[in-house]
Image 1: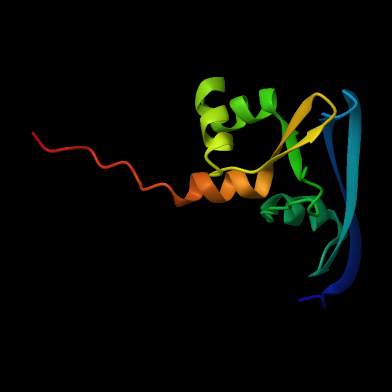
Image 2: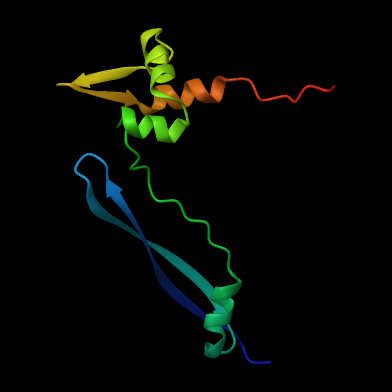
Length: 121
């Protein structure tokens, strides 16, 4: 049996999105290095297909989002959102006339809600 050959690969991951603040398309890219040992160079593609790569881009998440984006993200209505802002359950800031909802505050609030339990009848 032939000895394996060490190879190094650089994989490029690309993700597209939209900058909410400026409504412009943006592209994020990151590179991951992979080392593997194979006996036959023709195996490279088949070996890569066997790999499961779960890749998350570095935290570039928005710290605040618009009221409209918060309504979509959390699946609630405008009245309920302003109720939660008014009673301090969720934090927000004002930038001129625009209300910016604090994502960390809202995520924390929604994660603290009790789980749904279906009643037994």
